[in-house]
Amino acid sequence: MATDANGVTEMRYAYRMILLAYCTAVQSQGRFLLWLDAQNGTILKLDPLIHNIEGTATVFNRDPELEPQKPTFKLMLLLEGSRGD
Image (tube, rainbow, N blue to C red; front, side, top):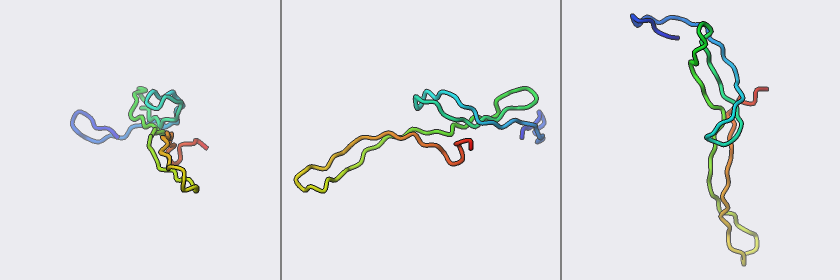
């Protein structure tokens, strides 16, 4: 919804679509939820459906003579419902 110059709420027609595009934030191709104004084509909202996270974890070996390892990992998360199925 939008408001006019007097602050009155007015309904608008809009197109909602899943857009497949390259995302520089995660250096990968991903899906975005795009809302377009049906009257003039203005982008109303653009939500990324992917996120990139990094972390470390301690991995213990069953052999007590070996030291635990701390590997670094990266994950690209897809939000629920973003697969487009």
